Image 1 (cartoon, rainbow, N blue to C red):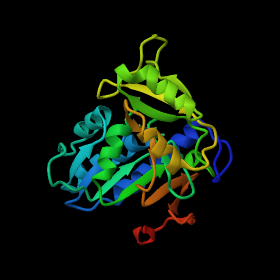
Image 2: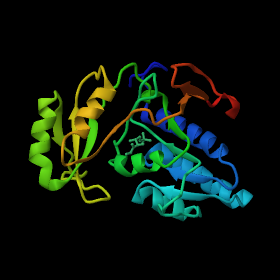
Image 3: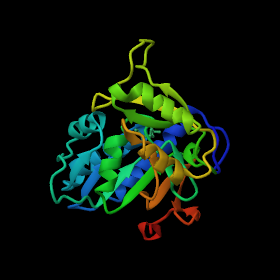
Amino acid sequence: VRGKLGSAKTKQQLNSEKELVGRAAAGLVQPGMKLGLGSGSTSYHFIRFLGERVERENLRIEAVASSRDSEAVAREVGILLSEPRRGLRLDLAIDGADEIGPDLSLIKGGGGAHLREKVVVAAADYFLVIADSSKLVQQLGSFPVPLEVVPFALPWVMDRVEAIGAEPVLRLEQGGADRPCLTDQQNYLLDCRFGGIDDPAQVAVRLEKIPGIVAHGLFIGYARAALIAQDKEIMVLRSDGTLERFDTCDQLP
Ligand code: 5RP
């Protein structure tokens, strides 16, 4: 496990970090907020802790989930869910990431939910990333950039992605079946290995020009801050690259 924050960690240690930061994020939610709920294991902890607050404090909130999985967890813990609607702005979206660059550019979509995740964070006034310490990197690109692709366009998208220097691999269902993994929208996922990405914004623009790609996993300019757990502490990363111990929400830009 790489990352500026520290040495290799076990899955269990990383899971404790995810839990720690998920709990801290749930503590930031204020009564009456309209929220975007992320997807993945870190968001799962956040949603569960938020559900505890809903029950214990009778916290009144409204939330939009970014995947069917998150919707199911939120429903189970008693969070009131809404669908997107005209005029709805979210106060705060909280979601995980697969890689976090020093300027808060992100790779997301390890769980294949990045299309809805991007829709949700774009509808939010504030996007807060939550992550374990393995996610912070000096340069994006060790993690392959996921693309959600319309099945009809797949072969030509693969050609075009290869032409811009990536190695595309069709994501298959887990458990050895030879079937393509389908997103919540019934599209395919292509995991594109770029290696170190010098200019993520430029790669994002190139991907956006390829017909058939519904969404790519590069999130540039969306996140306002990231809370990153490191052992028993939480750090806050801001877009200017500053990283310090997180003690109070006044430290959030
Ligand atoms: C799902 C995502 C997740 O936020 C990302 O994969 C991080 O997941 P985890 O919290 O399990 O490490 O983008 O599409």
